[in-house]
Amino acid sequence: MKMKRGITYGILFLDLISMIAALGLASYLHPSQTWGMLLSRSMALQWLPALAAAWGIWILLYFRMELDGFRGGWHFPTMSSQLSLGVGLWGLLLMVFAFAGHFFYSRLAGFVLNRCAMALLLRSSSRRGATRRIAILGNGHVAREFARKIERHPELMCEVVGFLFPGDGDRPGPTSGAPADEAVSVPTMGVLDVLRSRNVDELLIALPDASAAELKKLVALCREGGISISVVPQWYELYVSRARFVDLDGLPMLSLLEGRTSSVTAVFKRAMDLVLGAAFSVVALPLLVPAAFALLVSKRRAFASETRCGLDGRPFKLYRLNVDRNRLELLNPFERVLAQLSLTELPQLFNVLGGSMSLVGPRPESPQRVRHYSDWQRQRLSAKPGLTGLAQVHGLRDQHSSEEKARFDLQYIYHRSIFLDLSLVLQTCWTLAIRIFSPAHLAAPPPSTTPAEVPVTKIPAEVGYADSTHSCAD
Image (cartoon, rainbow, N blue to C red; front, side, top):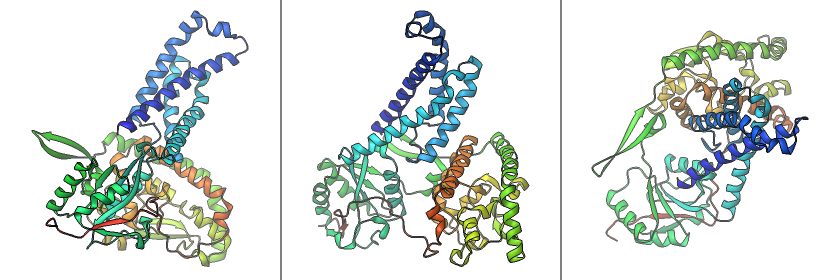
């Protein structure tokens, strides 16, 4: 965490220096300016108040909007979208000083380059081995989720080298990245030797229903061996709650604060849905009308409707173009392009304007799926469903499991805000642009409609797993 804090302040420092460089360059390029005039005291006094205002506003926005670029994991579309909103708001606030016109529009590229350079530096350091090596004690969804998040956060300077799990538990499946014949079975007393042989610096405990006596013994062994210990709470409510650690006279307590959406935010969100939904509808009509006409001629029906569950589980009719996206191999090239570019979803803009959906939110699912929701997954229904969402910009679509999407959707529900919604809209446009300009992606249907397993984290093949198969009496 100290490393992450240092990187956050380092990026802010680069941003502030970039403002000075941009100001100097913009002033130098002005035909009436010379180096002598730029370095004069009168010029410094002229620009100092505006520069101080620019710095102050940017520092405030930087921390308030978490603009370091690593929020949610390093993801270039997310970073660039968040920066676009931050720089836009920054520019609007600076307009009162008549200062933004000199260098504002060039700053977005500079800020993006700062973050990309930092990400490259961090990944380069990781390849040189300047990272903390972490082993995860656990084999369930929580363990794999943390492995995935560590992989997506290069600023943590950590590397997951393997998993430990009890011998009676299921070994992490193909998502774990290590072949089955690499597994090692050792008693509790031998775990420390396994960790030392892998040069492990920290053990992350993410194992539910573990024996307290067994864990105490393992923690004591790790501490004796100089290996740090971190513990992951197992309650999924943390995804939609802000966790606050409270030390009550030496007794640790985790306080979960429920996230609530204010009425003001709800009003602004609905206004954004109406304004942007109407604008997108106008832009989409030149695509929607010809596509609907072609489907009407070929299939005698342009649109299809499906029953989906909306806010609080209330059913509503969701509209889309009459293309079966679940049978891509049977579609003609025109219909396949519509499906793979998600243009079949354009009619849902009318759901947005009608109020049954929002531009951003969890994707609505069928009553059949909702009927089998766990209590944890059912929290997705606490927000109005959206045309796009956090899960979709990370590549998850309708065919993916509700469990996978719920992890992103619940994070969105807690952190939702107007700025997050705008950022996700920009990221969706970015994702759509990538699909449009990737002809290979549209050339042929996928070999199977079942999504392939995606590696959770890049765990080296030579690192296996240690099974704690013996009791603490060993």
